[in-house]
Image (tube, rainbow over all chains, first blue to last red; front, side, top):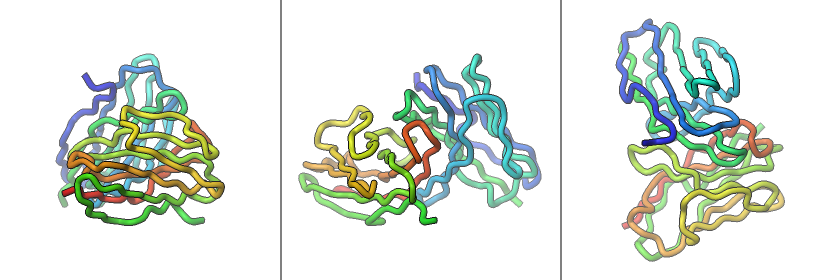
Length: 108
Length: 112
């Protein structure tokens, strides 16, 4: 069993839909990252959070430390949101453990 | 403010050779982490350097080694390359260990 599990693995949506990606983890963590990776490889950090909720534009991330669960929400999705979204947990202060990612495709 | 940069972008090597990958940290960042991402997989932690000292290591053999320089730029060295070393190698810098990490564009290594 992976230490970081994401669901779903693949997601397709129509433009404008509300999207939720889930992340569950089994280790004690100090923080959790949500990352975005486009074809070609570059990774962009969307959020780092250790409690509660963060919002940036149309993106919202929440975390429940007791339940070891986090969600990434995208409101009013757009084709440019198409990418792989990766959840990564910070174990101690040095090691990021990554999920395998959720591939999102948003169609016009 | 310059972001994290990596060089080269792509590299092709032969099994058994050695390779050096380079990473320039974001200004003001003293911590750099290296990751290996095989095709279709999530990245795997290789090691982290903080102020020129190794600060943590993942499950990679000793032929994966690193350096961090006084200007906080970093190198990843891989000796005796194997076919399975073919992957995207990512570095990420942060203001200190435990802070948000900012990723470079990666170096795609192909071993034939």
